[in-house]
Amino acid sequence: MSTRIPFLKGHGTENDFVIVPDPENAVDLPPAAVAALCDRRAGIGGDGLLHVVRSAAHPEAKGMAAEAEWFMDYRNGDGSIAEMCGNGVRVFARYLQRAGHVSEGDLAVATRGGVKTVRIAKDGDVTVGMGKAVLPEGDVTVSVGERSWPARNVNMGNPHAVAFVDDLSHAGDLLSPPPFSPASAYPDGVNVEFVVDRGPGHVALRVHERGAGETRSCGTGACAVAVATARRDGADPTATGTPATYTVDVPGGTLVITERPDGEIEMTGPAVIVAEGEIDADWLDTATRA
Ligand SMILES: N[C@H](CCC[C@H](N)C(=O)O)C(=O)O
Image (cartoon, rainbow, N blue to C red):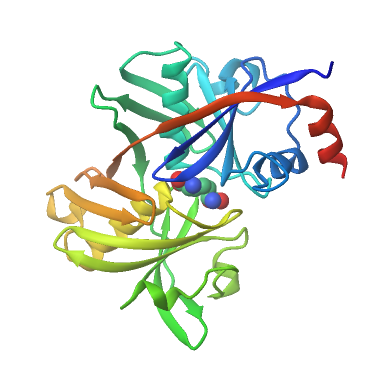
């Protein structure tokens, strides 16, 4: 009988992930294997994959092992690697709680974007300390069809271009990455968010994610949108000394983002484990070589 590899399926505001628990980093997951697992027809299906590894067992996380026992080895659904995934960290924490590795309360998670603090609340929501945004200088333009918009360049460990639009339908079908200029702005690609206002401290977005396409939610994207909106509204907490909180409606639900005067950003939202099962290792080997 073929070797079986355990997996779970989970989501945060319908940004969904294949979760592969692998404490000793023994499962080989090259990009083709990740893409096969995330394939929504021939595989399990997911916007991305959360490889759950002890930090001490992964060369990219060894240096964080003293601070965070677990490393979120995040991969996009196309197999590419991204520095950070905000919805993913919440689902990762929910898995650790379900597996009995952590209980309610605070924990630290190692990521390629550094160690993130996570708080699992009794009411089920999960809050992540997302760190500080970096806002590189330089004008960026995003286009869809005949329309173009100036976009705010925000880095949350991963790159984002935030465009404020009159109607979310103006983002079009988002079946391909929206063109941006200058091309040099994002040499490794970018996540593009389109934003409309819903009221004071309340916005809604659609997103085309690098390495995944249009998703129902993007945690780092919601943070980038909150940061860009605060600057647009003259409510930059690092200038006003007053925290700025935005409710961000995403197609898959709602996230609440607070940026503090010191620039630290917290994101709160749900995290759900949907199912668990086993991957057939022979299938994965064949799919990886296809
Ligand atoms: N596609 C993103 C990574 C996942 C981000 C998103 N799923 C989130 O919740 O932050 C990138 O390549 O930077």
